[in-house]
Length: 240
Length: 399
Image (tube, rainbow over all chains, first blue to last red):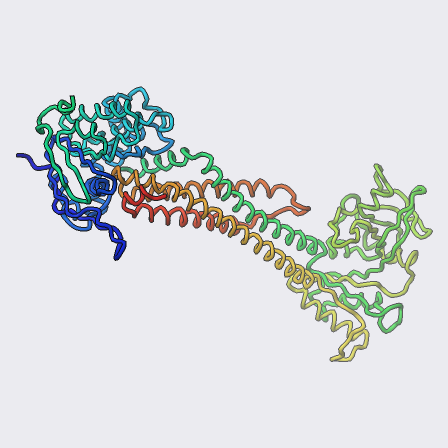
């Protein structure tokens, strides 16, 4: 069995001090295999966003260990952390978070630029990533000229352009209508079918049902962990 | 990621917000240009004042009588003037010009003109008083000795009496006598309210004969060999005059008064310096206000883009790259804005501002440019480095 992409042990996150202390995570342990498609569900305040931010190395846990592709993230310095975010993780936000007034292709190129890829190669790979999400013809458009679904697909292209070990999506369909949701989810299905590991947060059951494995988070703890399809299976079968 | 690419990122960042970038640059431009121009105007007026005083001649002293009327004990006489030409007692004296002057009416072909100062003197006066002859020629020592009635007139007189006519060799009537115009003085800048060009100069002997009579002199203009010998000349002249006028050693008052052009220049320069300091203070305040403007815009720009910094960090941008990008943006804004400000000031200084020709002070250019660039860098860099140090999630949540 290959090394797990994600290995989290007894993760805790505490906000505030004294009376105002909030235990966002109360000891979460989780292992995710390569090629898996994991959905995390939970009501608001259950700690799912906190967990996601820690998994994406955007935030640091109060205690617990987090191994990303075998590397202990808590031991990394700022520079190496930046490298880990760049090479190992593709993060997709609920609010898209594209750089404003910058064309779609330039947005997708950004992680490659920080990775030090040459401009020509960068352009080629960015266009290829836009092709995957079906937006090659909108490469020159700026974010405010794209619909919500298109913006999110640009964000997906940006997340996968560095070919990271892990795609993290924080409620990627939360701001989208049902058609755009279907577009984005089918992109996820294709990516997973191509072997990418995906972890996403959602509160919509139809999104959760398409994943191969479903986790429910309540009050900062995992209460359900259900495998809906084997890791090697084609994604999305279960839902249909 | 190469430095060149970071520069391209910065340029893209600037061009993505064209209006804000250009307004920031405009703010810096105005701040820098205002400082340079204000100081230049102050400096220009100071220089104009000292130019006018230098036009009087800085290596001369003027001896005047303190007495009123022609009482013999206080009057300056031609004899005294002659006594000042003494290579033993007064070795630093280059020339001595006795001066009489009065107002007179000059008439030419029925046109009258009242000359406010009709001067009678010796030929040395022209160089000593820094009053060159423009066209024609000055009178000679021979003219003076023979008492020939020749006159050199000022620009104003020439314009009044001879509009469109060459005045040379024309005959004018002064005090009932005919004088021949032999030259016209160069235009001279006026020191005070009096028109320095409303003058006429004739040989001392002729003026005394026709206008003033053989009484006392109005003043004696003494020229020193070099400007730094003026003080020596002043004491030499005092010594000779004290002897001639029987002034006791240590007497508190003398019957004459010595006016020193270089002393006048010093006083006036001090006044002008005060003026420049005042304008400089105003300029410093405007630079400060401009600086606060730059600070404000930089803070707003970076704060507004904290979210963008969060996105870039989430995509794997190292802190250094982000910091470099924002520093380059701040540098470009302040350097381009500052350079445009200097250019605007240079263009503005070629025009007269409220009657003063501004003269750029190089140090003010350096100071204004330096201060605005430093402020731009500091207040662009500081919040950027703070934002770059934030955890990505905090930067993303920043409102």
